[in-house]
Length: 196
Ligand SMILES: [Zn+2]
Image 1: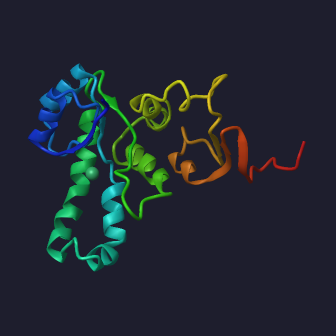
Image 2: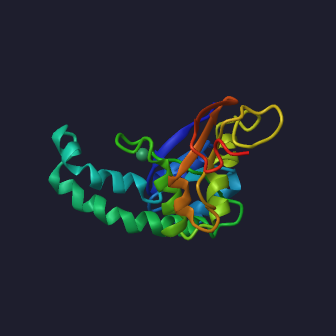
């Protein structure tokens, strides 16, 4: 059975030893924990900032629902450098499968692009590796590598195009000008649209 666990501290090691498929956050994981994950083939999704940025941007709304307190928020602010430090360390571990994820936070939907920017700008990740983490590696982590995550014959044809080259400027991922889902075009504002 595939399992995805949101784990901090020693829970990271425990979830790895229990052969969980993927670990979200991994905050306070030691290098030893990260190496153990690499050995076990455990996917890790170190949150590179979006989840915390989203808490801060929507602070009033979170406080309003009553599950969060004013006192809890300074700790959240302090978590941002922890996220950046963890992803930087995770990227140094040979063979560790660092996959893209957003923690599925309310308020963050539709803002996945910000996570890619965080990975590159704040986590120091190579832009191509960041794109792979959100495409073929993410598909593989869900056991869907034969359907989505790559452009090849027989795949789902879920394709986007950007205005700009994300390998030179990762913020291009904010400028989606073309969307194809299952081979059907839903959006096409590409610059060449209408021209031959
Ligand atoms: Zn979480």
